[in-house]
Length: 332
Image 1 (tube, helix red, strand yellow):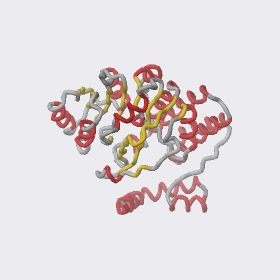
Image 2 (cartoon, helix red, strand yellow):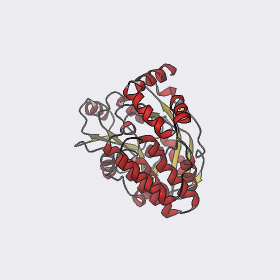
Image 3 (spheres, one colour):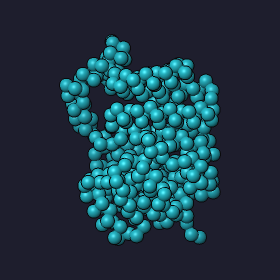
Image 4 (cartoon, one colour):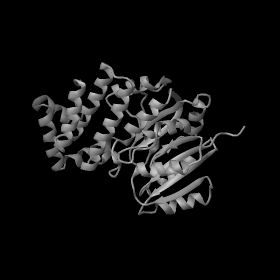
């Protein structure tokens, strides 16, 4: 029996340092019926050279080059040039275990209206084997709305697009990436996927190694444009979520999500903070408390969170962030 084709969509921008290991992790998959749609998003380094060297040895790797337009545009370009019955998103600096695609496919091969999720672990620097896999409450089979509620109730929920193996029919129903978004663009996208699906099947032992701490990653980008996109993706995601179920519980989950963003960006961007605050007022109240390291939380106890954030910002300007990064690396 011929296995369905899985299209792996990988947007690539200046990823020469990590790209080879990512490609090797794809080539080594035990599930062989795949194509890699590599979208070179205007890279200025050796990324395209590396892609070409791999594509010469494996015809399943298909390379497209576009003008630098961002992750969402590149991802949509990849979808439009893919042929798979299933879609898998993979960042150019992450790693998947050898059985990743096989286990995700098996989880939903008889459930065409379900997404497959996976185990994931975070790692820093270059040693992906140092990744720590910490089980989450959503690491099990669940209905979509239950998955969303439980995930959003966590203080550090994760719903990145790379979590899923996506049947093509669900993607078509949910819609593609919103090209107006950058920072936190997965929030809107994954909520639409979940609401288009009946539920989630958890693929145990399908491991995804998620690289963190890169200075040029979207999650580290807190520019004006990025924060505006963060507000928009939160608004879009919460609107769809509340359209599906508008209750006291779901309104609180959304209000807390807005408050988390206020904690992240305060005291910068007061106009955008006001937008977040207005959304909270329309929903009722929040219960989420600020999170941070020992220094920040100690300051919060003495000064309150707003003054503490201002002091933290001053410390960063004085070089505290560099000291904290050094301490973190020494603990690895």
